[in-house]
Image (cartoon, rainbow, N blue to C red):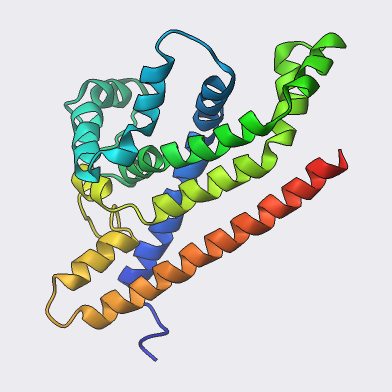
Length: 233
């Protein structure tokens, strides 16, 4: 029965993981759409550098990303000190920092999926809307964005799944504080370091697999629904 039940600390880790992943996905979505559209349609100086920066978290060791976040958003960091003074927002060793780390690590996956969707939109449809007098922003909102819905949904779920499993950047930036920054991956790591903790680690690992598979299934379903609606337009 212990394989099917979670204690209070494990429930806390699960709940925090879902909150962190959801906040990371929602908070990064506007930036992901903007970055994807700039890379798909934009032609501007430094585009290659911008593209490299967007995808840098994919190739950097997560620990390096976490350390960079600590330097920038820690209480003594330039951005962290400014945000704490002006907004009272603290990231270091808080769940908000875990969400930030998860958002940064999932951002490249989100951007890539949305960018591919933007690139698949027929430019002639956008040109037709512009010919009829629609301003660029209206064309984007009523033509490009709806037609890219399947890719946007896929990008959101990919970012959510990545955030759910983020470990390296999170533990480097916000440590592994029970009830505050301990997510499922860090809870699994904690159990692997404790003698006799393997059964609990295995149980949480199984839970993580189930959540990841559920996220993928929901992604496929939402993408299918979005594609059907686009086809009816």
